[in-house]
Image (cartoon, rainbow, N blue to C red; front, side, top):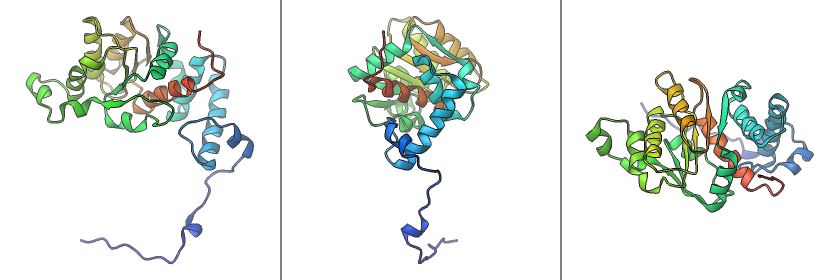
Length: 239
């Protein structure tokens, strides 16, 4: 069966429709690096203002929680987030230095903003494309990919939004003396997700994680993008 394009006489102008009311004041104060049009800025600021009311707006940790709440549409995720060993300071400093951002899956890589930093974003799956190492040792591709990245893991920004096995692999490398600047770990699921995040929290490195089986790519991406935003905020004071 073939699919033929349906012809239409409608112009682009006839098909374009704003999905939200544009508040010029909100658009003017929007500093989100990923929002480049008035509609995008209006949507972001409206969502962010709702998140501020739900989460609070007193600390830099609150700012990370706000973005996670916005990205998941779930106010409850703010209560399950954990910040260990001053991760915001560590993350902002690493971003300003241009440290590589090493992620577990391409969905995380795609979600990380391309603006506001000079960090190379590396998906570990690209380091073991034919799964040779994974097959050799019978481990997951994400775990194998992080092992392949062990030479660049020191001082890097690690973001894991999907694979508990990847978080465990990073923990093992930390225990062998390889220390990232920060680990953002939000693996999701019923097999080892909660345990892997608990393991990350026990390591002597800065980390942002969440408790339990919830998490996922949107939270990992939100954490990284908020760290980038903080690194570009001239009014942000990090002691």
